[in-house]
Length: 414
Ligand SMILES: *Cc1c(COP(=O)(O)O)cnc(C)c1O
Image (cartoon, rainbow, N blue to C red; front, top):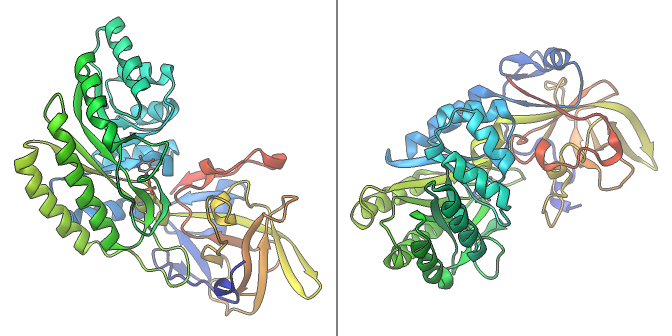
């Protein structure tokens, strides 16, 4: 528990949602009515209007030629993927099962790409049969794809996922630079490109992804610039022209006190410069950024109900029917070093003043099951609804739902 998060009310302005008559509105529906409609708590609700709005805003700032892909591991709910598929230019998948959902959404296989370390042989075959772009991450993958090509006679579309020789500064989760299980180290890429050429695979380009949850435009700009320059260097050894250049993303959203929404103006200008340079260095190539959290994170809430209120030696605990098993990220156990509170509200007491400092915990028999640690909130009783904001990404699918075997969470798109 960190001192910074103590005794703070809803501390990030969650102005993407309005309330009326003391109740939070999701897709225009008052929270209690929505809970009745779902038929249970806990549930996740995603607001389709906010999803659309986010993509529209992004398109407003990015140069027209930059393609936006949705990294669906951030939220693989099929209805969300279907909705996103109509808004973005492509979907990035990270498993054979995600591939199925992406194909079901009607996305053209041309615009689906597949990244992830440890792609199984069966998954590689599925990807080849589907005709999607495979971001290869090892020499083993290239060898297996060569065999699949030999046997099937189908074209095998590949891009090389590169582990860059630099790191993304101030990124919540580093996924490139130094020793990493992702991609192929930049210095080994020339050898890998030679293998790809010999095997007759259809080389299409490069994929570089340096990290996640970054809120600093300067760091993102520097990473995109370095990724682009690295791709230019690596392309000298490529067996075919670059048709596709994925510069990653890593755009963050605010979760904690003091964090602000990312200002995209400078990022847009930087991508404009990259786009212009790409026109001469990689004529006709698609320049792509792939985003997960940034596209969906702010559009979702997690809602659970208070089932008990307990006083323990002067400290008040509100025990909810949901917790870590549905929302590992909000409990602070999904890669966070220091636990901080997600923005939380009592969703059916939105006009009440804050009155007491409480901890909201889940029903699991582990002290890790915390949704809010010592937060200043309006007085709440059993039956009131707890809302965790910023829950549209890395929520249900990133949580250990079978742990202790409480009811599964329901997800809706409103
Ligand atoms: C997880 C992942 C993303 C999405 O990251 P966000 O931080 O959610 O935007 C994008 N690309 C790759 C390769 C990933 O593994």
